[in-house]
Image (cartoon, rainbow, N blue to C red; front, side):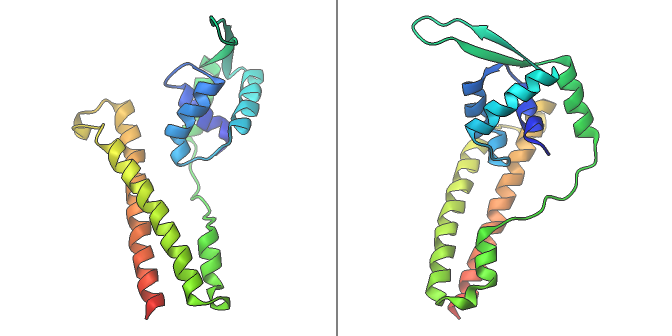
Length: 176
């Protein structure tokens, strides 16, 4: 997946300025596709050059003008074609797992500290997802666009739950 597809996915649901897009990105697809604001702004230029989005300057009173972006028919077609393509399994890149793989080189306490820190971070992520989940009442009755978003949220919940279960197992194994 390219960053362009993630940006088009956000713009498929709303018109946004670059700043608003970056903020929306952080609170939606940013949970599973990380990008810096600088990367997003660079990609917006490319998307506009390709004709996949249109940008329009919007004058604001008392603030600098901003550029608002909307997905075009060509951008929607690009997004639809991308959705229809087979998806390869995502390669895993995990710094903690690499450290654990050669963890015999450090005291066990060092590994336990790393695992405890990660457990705390993943617990926070799970709490965030559970809070968001409360916004989706009666998931079976949601319109398709919201049901699809709900399913991505459920994947995040399963990921964090599984990660925390593994973390408990790893801590238990290292303490014995």
